[in-house]
Image 1: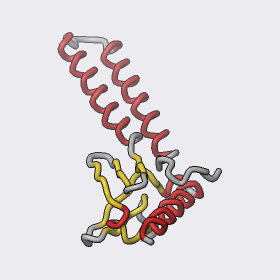
Image 2: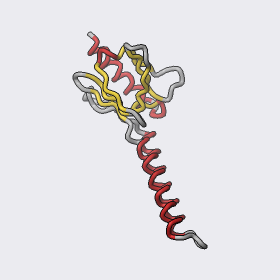
Image 3: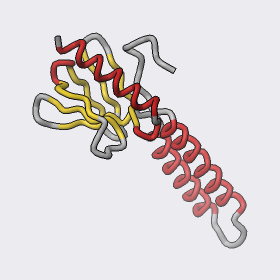
Image 4: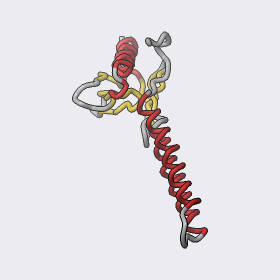
Length: 142
């Protein structure tokens, strides 16, 4: 399914789904353990297991929030830990090769930046999104 808006947000499909389902499963499993654990667990032990469940769930959920937001002036890349705003002129090349699980941007300052919002795990959709990003970079580099 091709996107009609070239400035639509780049988001992964499979990776986001797996991350969110995993987050819910971890919270449910550890939460159930905290509530149903028989024996000598004190209230503090149960509360700490709940806290661990929520922390792990939040970390997994964050994997599902990676994206890249294109605009007229540039691209905002939101990865797992860091976000970075780039002007189109800073992006020299878009590559999706070398076995990388996501798109890599070659930047004018000789750095490379992963775009986790476009993932190889998405197959044809991921390749189409990489091509769309490359077309945006080409369009704005003229």
